[in-house]
Image 1: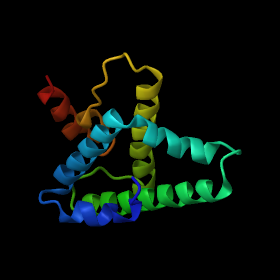
Image 2: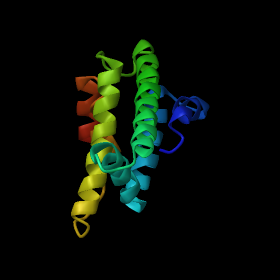
Image 3: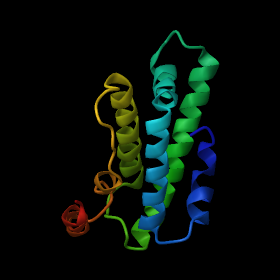
Length: 140
């Protein structure tokens, strides 16, 4: 997500409910993880590796914060619309982004394992319990 500051604008431009827009966004991110997991790994490496150049670590940290803040604002709007469960939007955004990073690391570490991340499972972080159960029943 090199243009993290644009996340709110991208989500706002997509037609549909908050849930539909976030499902679309998560699907796009998962496609990126499938195609280029190393991009997500590099962002983790740049922030975690003390040997990485300070400017790179700063840039990645700033972009990560912008991603989390933008996603948290979108989640808060979805909560006000009654589409996402109650909870701290920043905390929910952090968990969703951590899920994506974890899947990217999994993809890199176990390349031969079938990799098919589930938007429905990711969305369970944000949906009320009864909605998450309905998604589970709909899944094949």
